Image 1 (cartoon, one colour):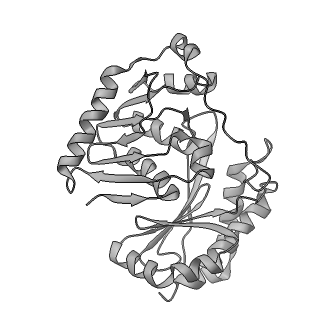
Image 2 (cartoon, rainbow, N blue to C red):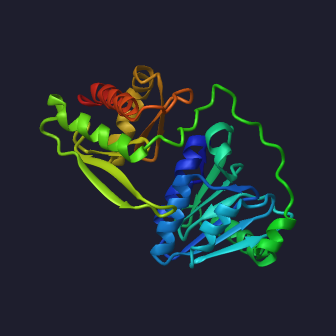
Length: 301
């Protein structure tokens, strides 16, 4: 049966479609301005040999973004001027959405999507797949020439002061992650937990990126991960649904100063939109507080 998603669920599922692609990935989006996370996910898929087709049609790509996409040897960038559809799919899952792959939309717009799977929605999945292939067939290879002729995007409202403030250029995200790791490792309440860090090359740009993870935290059956947000990944979908039905309202109330999203066996926690990233130690402490509150709610669930 088709599944309905709102904005946060849509963002999460698009990322998941990219992560779980085994051989083929199609992204159809009129407006294109990739977030850092999706850029890195595409690079990961490219390295795994996934054949990627990315179709856009309404906005000129920024030079840096085009350069990054050109580096992906398994990605075919296509342009279709009259494109309005938004569709994203791998071999098994397809999403028809109002959301563009446009960073502002992911964070600020109200979006809706319908999810189809090849297993459960076979006929409708096949029809949507056929239309996606028709769009690809009608598109042409994107070059810098076609890019310069692309229509300028419709004016997008700029974030107001209530929208999350971007980290300053001097803010060190990896230092923030290391500070959080120190806080968690030194917390006596977590003495039995092994917090591990993993560093890997940035898939876009220079430098390394650092991730924290721990199994069985903040409770058994849950895996904690942190890179730029907190992810609490449930290993059992029935356990997740039970906790969600019993505790979602309480969890969201106690973590009221954070943004909490429940979707597909994962609770994802972000800082509030108005939270300003200025000091790595302060941001690390802010996320440690979020974990403490999450643990308080979930530990006896």
